[in-house]
Amino acid sequence: SAVISQKPSRDICQRGTSLTIQCQVDSQVTMMFWYRQQPGQSLTLIATANQGSEATYESGFVIDKFPISRPNLTFSTLTVSNMSPEDSSIYLCSVYDFSYEQYFGPGTRLTVT
Amino acid sequence: GQQLNQSPQSMFIQEGEDVSMNCTSSSIFNTWLWYKQDPGEGPVLLIALYKAGELTSNGRLTAQFGITRKDSFLNISASIPSDVGIYFCAGHGQAGTALIFGKGTTLSVSS
Image (cartoon, rainbow over all chains, first blue to last red; front, side, top):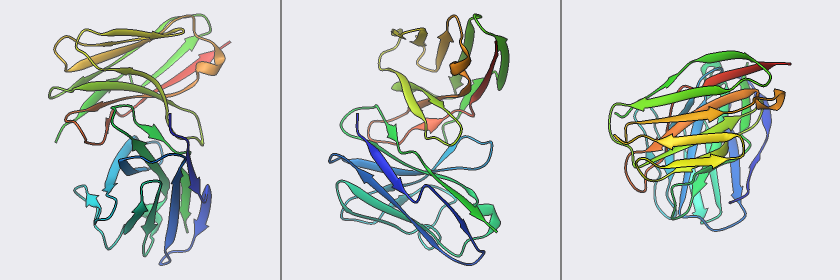
């Protein structure tokens, strides 16, 4: 299985600022996804990070708020822009490659004050 | 959109007891996966199921892909304290799409 790392592991940010989360995979993968897990909740898909093209966002998520980059097959970033306390969540990077087994990074725990 | 109903929401059991949880969907899924999430960690894949009727074991865990392709269950036998955590079912409706998750079952085990 792919080994996924995320930076930072956690952060406390002020309202109105932005945070960029990095996701690094130890092998090339075709599909990378970003999920949000609000406190005590399940995982909700934010977007699919497409290599070399714009990300595909799920309903309720927009590029201006959650810009995503994917410059190559092993790396992606998610930015949480103009943060508010409602953005306090765990953000998870996930990958799968030519199979239906999807793996997750350790997550980035974000608190917005 | 597709939704998964996972039950029970939480369980409180004694060490050594068996546990069962299940998921149902409003539409057909092509794969079912079961994950466990410990506090402060990302979900870890436990079992993946690919065919209707498939029954797969991983140690004390057993999961089945329902014949209708709209449901799956996970059993844990002889529970131990380290089984504590949140268990999520998840599925793919279509190839190449991201997983859809159930709301999770929180398992507590008392010794």
